[in-house]
Amino acid sequence: MVVDATGIEPDDDPAACRWAALRDQTHGLDIVAAVIRQDGRWAPLHNDAYFARSACADSAYDHGLDEPR
Image (cartoon, rainbow, N blue to C red; front, top):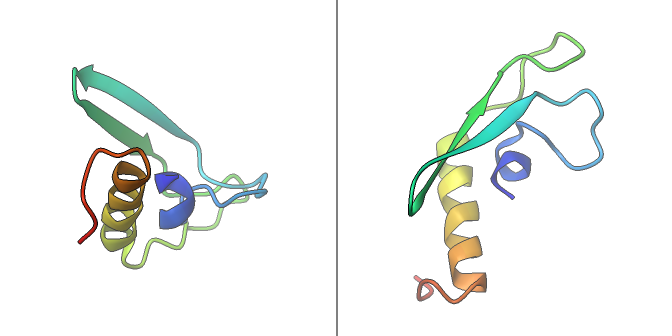
């Protein structure tokens, strides 16, 4: 999932950032997230846009929505 790949909410991390997914279009989804973790530290967001694009592309390919690049 995108929030795991970007470092916003790594798997099995109870102190991870809070986030919400908002669907405001038929074919779109926005993710809104805090950048401060529950323990008060900053989330590791270096290259988060790259990791988000990669996770989305992998998910689209896995679900047959796109061809591999």
